[in-house]
Figure 1 (tube, rainbow, N blue to C red):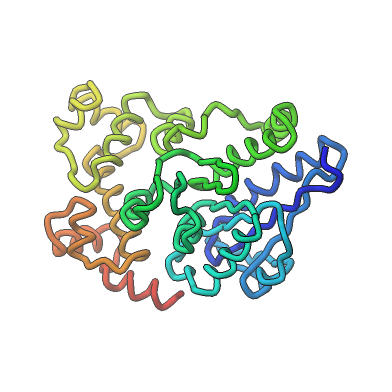
Figure 2 (cartoon, rainbow, N blue to C red):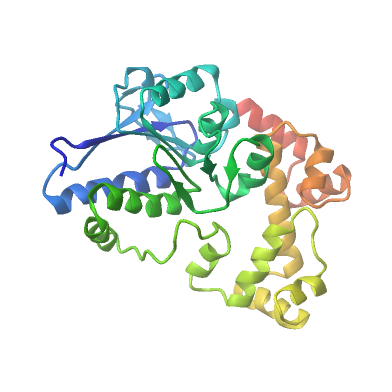
Length: 320
């Protein structure tokens, strides 16, 4: 055991997921409890030292501002929505400073984007939330982007989201203090470590819910992989080795919807994410989400969300 506890710092960006933060910090608390000693210390940071509002509207107090942080063993960047707007020159310089000082840097959820925008993932393997994978891959050609739940290297770590952060922290504890310590923590959190780092973020998460049949999980995974070029119902059924009728029955009985409506739901979710988080034109977004034109996307968007794409973007920009 180290003479002094490891210090892990968490930089919180506006609209981050409080579930992601809890899944990062609670395993450290549990590790201290089981060891009967301070294996870990942690601190919460913001850019200005002021409280940070989470994606669910909770205000989380910061212990200090990022510029006051002194030599942590690991610095976690915890981000969620609005991450592109947060990639400021000041933040990049602060992260680069800690990288030069030899600090291990970790990006949780879209925190990976902020590390990448500072050039700190160049030449590394990395992941990000699955909804951002395609755009992330296209923007950062110097990074080996993978759909893994998390990627753990010597001095760069990335995780796709809230539950993958819990997986990651158990591996961090195992690396720091051994497998037995990690198993104790998983046990007290009643967490079944049945997934590996290399498991994809989508599909398996659905199966883990314990409610969906294998064929339905496979169908949804195919949908998620073909949002830009949606398949006809017959082709979708064939891709997962079932009949159209059986596939329709599965969606109706288990998700109370049709395959076509669920497909549209996924495509509109992608379109909304691109609309709010990028500057792409409506025509580009339509093509990326499988719509034949901007007009077709706009019509479906209004039907689903109750406002036009342009109104959504204007409202989002105004709230930032």
